Image (cartoon, rainbow, N blue to C red; front, side, top):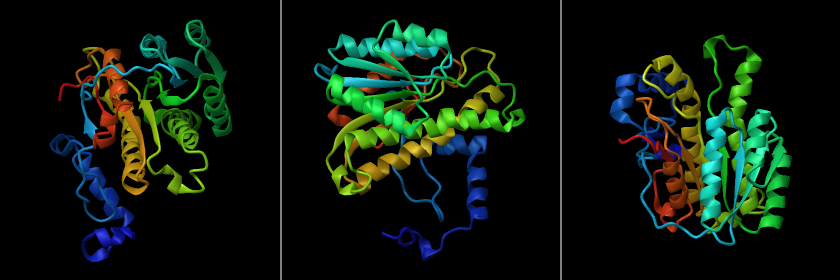
Length: 302
């Protein structure tokens, strides 16, 4: 299906024209008006469904008995580790088994905090082969993997993005973009062995992936710059999430879903981990298959 047939007079925009459109869409006022209702296409705009929501629809508490949920953890601070603790306890309380694969870049005290409470291993989560190997181990030892949850951790303390060294910038793009993508890709391979060579195997396959992105900063005195720094990386995860789900549902007719959760609010309120647990309940339910919304700002009221 050549994309050009979907657009007026079958002519793609030049890169310059696309970037000009996107820059205009990023304007604060325009962004508020549009709020995720359109996604810039190659030409003008394809009609799309809304992909960004707030709280997830409520569902009955699922029974996780006999199922495993794997956490891949790139924690930055204690609040990230406490979020893992809250979600893993939620899984165990409802009968499920938990495995935590903690990034070797996570501070040692946080590694110990998590591994003292749950079955854990410290791994190189940037390495696709290692991620694959540990997912296989979890599948063998714990049984069927119901979902994989990747925690990107918060944005580390930085003064200005524009003043970062090249290495510092690459560490951030790895933490918030390529590592979540690596985990998602290897999880898909786990759900559909051989799928990368034969995409037909994805049809009707089930599975759930959740990326918990960086929190918005908390507090009354949060500056626009602090929020914008987080939004740079959230902004990269949004189209990734939308594209992966469109491929899975529309092209491959798969029942696998990838949700991205963004905790916190623009007003600087404290995030509530229960909202993420509710989103997990929804993600693993059958209802999530028909949800066009795949990115959830769970703490925002509108």
